[in-house]
Image: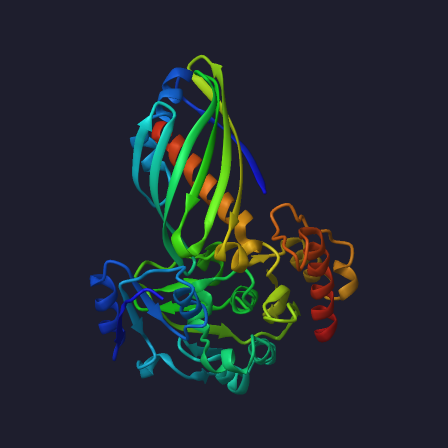
Length: 148
Length: 260
């Protein structure tokens, strides 16, 4: 399942890039994120409380940034485990295009789940990824659009 | 199952109080989704608040122009007592006898499973949702996959259906679970036509192109050529998104044929 989208952010490219690497900002933008710690330059550990319908469980996620080309593009590789609920794996490629005072952000996200989650909810995975992605980028863009 | 505290509330006020004071509380209606989820350890909650002891949430009542179903009315009660034929038919086709004796309308719509039958009835018949505090129109209630306009501690107390001039619900059921692979409710009330589709997308939706065509001429032929965009549809081993889109047309035409 893959989702793509793009947003225009009223801020210079470098500022957007810095925000994308800031664990505090990432935490604010990820739905249900309780903790986000940076363990090395390109690696983060996160705890995310997922609340999707009846499912309410906490995932521990390992987030690795690869193919980093500052300040224009990178790919996030995420692997998460949710105890008895199962596990998930996904990646998000983000690229920024500099338009001076504005920045155009493209993203492509895909993911798979395994374990019990996959058994009961395979038809829903697309919807879940779409929902989490939309939430993240909406929140992220709001950082600038709500200020003005 | 993770351990939790079980409460049986005697009134709506007590239930709300228990829910608001809990760090992670869950209302238990029929438990047809919540209990399996807890058993699978897909959810860990601190408090389960059972609404089964609240008498005011039960029953089906018909007045002249509308029918009111209590939030805790089970599917079999609706199947037996509803005065809207399409709703009786819909309720009698949910799950299996065990589910129909336990599952409730309030639980079903509050959960808003993308493949549940009741959301199609609520949206397709333009029902009004009564909660402990306000009323919500059907068009504003279902906001996304497993998402509704309900607040955290809000309870569906009743669902009120206006009496339609004609209505029909047809679904293509998953043969094992009887969940709707695709289900379509078509209705006409005071000249207003509604077509609500469940099972196909991530959330129940209205097929507005079909509604327009049926308003012009209420016949199966008028919607036979309408294609449905399947780009955001569910896809799994039971049915691809394209197949679901095709089924929307077929189910809608069958529903229209039944009442035209």
